[in-house]
Length: 211
Image (cartoon, rainbow, N blue to C red):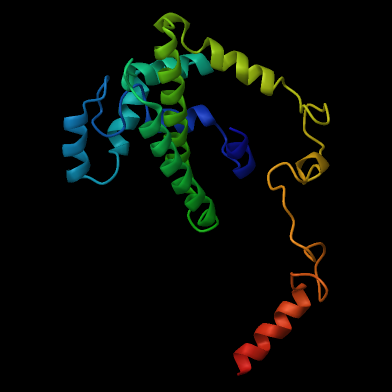
């Protein structure tokens, strides 16, 4: 959701409902039918957006994060014996595709909407696997993810405390949190470091181009 805000998505709910209006985006059924889905994907590489739009107009959309989780649970039911591995693998694939949409976003922003919806769907499915294995009833599914979301995003930035974040682009607490090893002579930019300055890069590539 934070990423959607960064790229300017006006409504995450509209984005999700356009692809998943209480049915599978491909087989257009609830619950999803894998055999029909495979056949329809073979005939048509992408969803039938027109039919999805008609379905969306005829149905009531979820009103909370828990409602969205329960909706995805009805479309793609999680099984008690389902392993996390394949679902995490699919989520990783979808994250890679979402990253690709960011690379082409300036030229074709529309791809982001479809891939971001897929990432959300797989996140919901993984949470449904967690709840299924815990024996959480269908009526209570969505409660834990709502509590976690409200704790992480309590209508203000947890770092600066402002309703609209005023933090610098890179927090000091971020430095060293992800990568912990720094090669020698890596600090700074320029001749004495391992990074070229913009001026040095231009000069170097001009020489290469001339050669």
